[in-house]
Length: 343
Image (cartoon, rainbow, N blue to C red; front, side):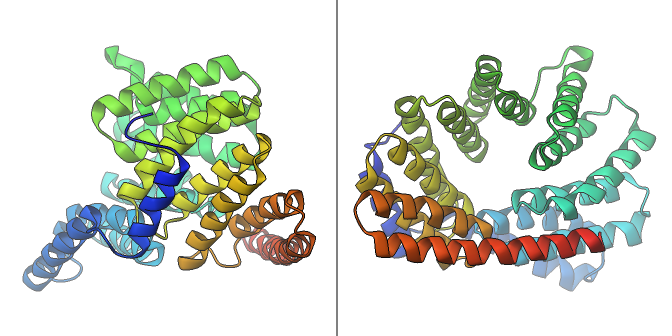
């Protein structure tokens, strides 16, 4: 594992980040782009299509900072500008749709993402043809939505389409497409093939210096090992993903919480409940600092923490955690049913 001394080092870095002990390069980049946006707005107006090349990267930086509401507002604004300037059936509008959909997918808002992905795919296919490289990213996102829905067959089909588009004209698969293919294969129980795809994605993303993508590859590998009960193999991958995410993402980012949650699951499986409790408490702290309060992510973390507290003999704490998690999940289930009825 690169540059990591284990859970204690990861936890120390997280504490430093929460205390504001180090400047965030992402924050500095975001501030610089915000100034560029303000200058361009003053010169061109708030609805000028020339703002699109600023809005998209600024939205990505806001996402990395964990500022999802601002990131979403920027993506929606970009879509509105693109439609007004070029029409809803234009390539710039399709790009804006795909960008907003990808942000929704990162937030697990699949019902919001799916119509945008479908619309973007239709426009890109009509305007650029079935072999357009831009369609590969959209197909990969359709695979993620299908996988989240539990439709493994559709997910595999979309992932294969994404890779096939990448390979046309002598090209090579993109790490993003290999990652989703690996995740689909793991979900289907094809662990050897899934691990191979994830390792290929990891090699490509490391070589490209894409740290966020590298962290997602490592997280995927960690989950693949957990599914196979290869708990000791899972730890290095999960710890490195956590290390990368903490150095790049905002301190209250849900992906950081997800890393520590997965780390806690690995420790539980290795019969290390005290270490599991530390990792899971850290995950909960991250979620509560950000937008994770009363979310399913928090509830599932609390359920695992209840297991750890029970193993440590803290039955009162375990029961309180279990009851709160059940309350949150029941509320989320009711809300999801309402959203599906309205969709």
